[in-house]
Image (cartoon, rainbow over the protein chains, first blue to last red):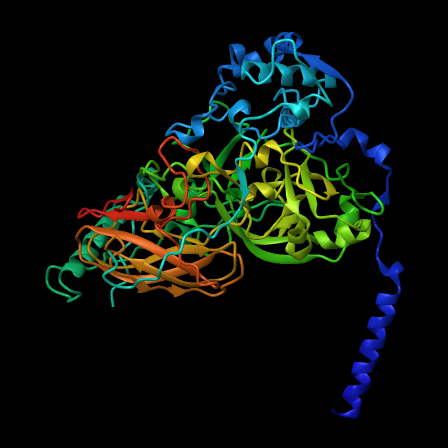
Length: 189
Length: 443
């Protein structure tokens, strides 16, 4: 190695050490904020255990009343399908048949998914306007229509994660590639 | 040497071509038609110039050569020629939604030249329409299992060292209407939930390092500022390795329908994880199991099971010319053209078949051949005028070979009523004796 190249390399190494030793070199363009000040945006629910579910509660009867005012126009009476969307009731047991019916009852592995999704996305024309009590009540109504909780059930941060969902345990993590095609070039079939 | 006969586009375009032709002097249109006939004749006689071959008409000075053009406007965002009105996105005409807020539209791949999809035709998939976001007030927050929660403005984000990378993006629902029957007519409908371009932004790792990851951090959520707050759980490992926080595509800021002013981008993964209108990143130690990763964007398997977190896009290819709805101008030489891509690496080979997959030959790959990027392939083809079934088959840099639909069906729960995603099966286009090209499921 030429002495000149050695000098260049040594200078580079020294510069690198200087940079990595100085944590303040990070730009820090972002501004610190407290979790309390993030709260209005912090709406996610960790659905297997319900972490993030807020205080409040709602029952099936209240859920039906709210549903008929705010949801029925698109989803239809008794959530059986309406002008815009298909049914949200039934389909349990259909996944082993030729005609799968995907509803919150048949598909959701965890009941708090209802809370998370209704709260962040419904009603479609006025999302994020429902109160926690309304979201719990709507969750209760949909779960009851699907036969998963009794008519007198009350949903809250404690009870919702405990609802047994029939599709829980039927999911597995991606294991592809699953196919093993061969690069045949002639007389392949 | 004959130049390849011109392939007539799909019928929709033929109508437009005819109206465009009407603006030509009538003699010009006649000459065009006569030229087409001449090409067909040449091919049938094996290229020999005989007495039956019509010559091109004498040239006339075009109107454009005899007049002044349009002056340069003071300011302008240029648009395509008025003769290219068919180069547009279209919504699905197979699975028609009763509303158009949670809906999708397709990239017109049959017209795309080269690997870059123009921004105005990048496919769309929204879950509650396109929000109108002012970049001056938009904020991104990073919180959860971090040492210091941080808020960034667009100006903050754009001050960080940037990267620019070419990647494809494909919706996992691409092809979902065509598993068991050829429901779509064009390659726009069969494969148009696909686009490719140069994404510009900041690595996830840059901003996550600023907030500082807490011990035990393994997953993060990305959440959009749209009316559905679309959200996905992402393994931290993916975000830290090549995830990008993107603000530009193909030389300009993102279009509103593609996430303006900010979106996530995870190379090679299904489109919906690239959350648009990105407002929040939360770090955690496990996935959240949102509706969008349980009830949707999961894959039905035999025995009532569901494959979850199937984010990588399988290796795939499709012939875009000739493709469904087009018409060949007669027997003779053509160039088969198409695209190949893989969410797991580079494209290594593409083979084409004109007999429905019995015999194959290797196509030429056009440079550049990039990681997780659309790659152009092409192969010469001398059509003999008889029925042909055209197919392409990609192999990636890992040696994985694109399967047939039948091969996929042996592993997954595919049937006619299913809303089944991740269709990377070999596409078949039939060419009839009349030169009409249509979508078929080859057996």
